[in-house]
Image 1: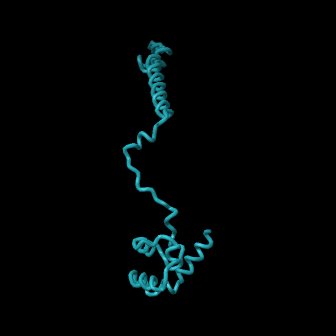
Image 2: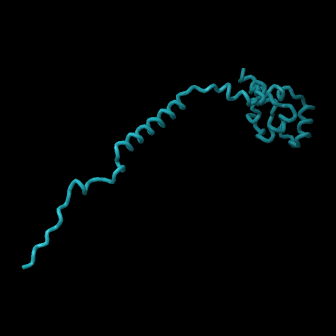
Image 3: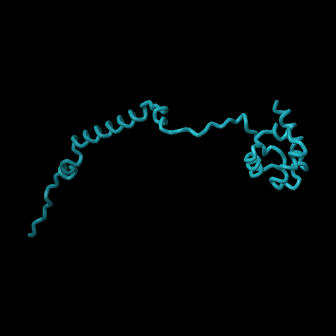
Length: 136
């Protein structure tokens, strides 16, 4: 008769074990220590106060703008950003300057900037006076 084949005994403990060192408690301890050290390092960096004045000491700031001296000339009808820039190059930056223009000043500015009568047509002097009165 033929003998029944017997399968070798399966060792259950052996089949569920992992290779040595893969999940060793020592590796887990190293990983925990590394994570704790990294967390401590970054939290101590973020929590540290920074002296911004000392860091910015080497940087020279731009000239401070005196906003009280400059008005937004584009609020006048007929003056856009380009024309406001052209007027500021001529030294006109305030409504009070435009409000003080005489007929001769209007002709001079009209010829210099080739406005073709726009300053008179849009009544910049009157607009500037109204803006000064409403601002006060």
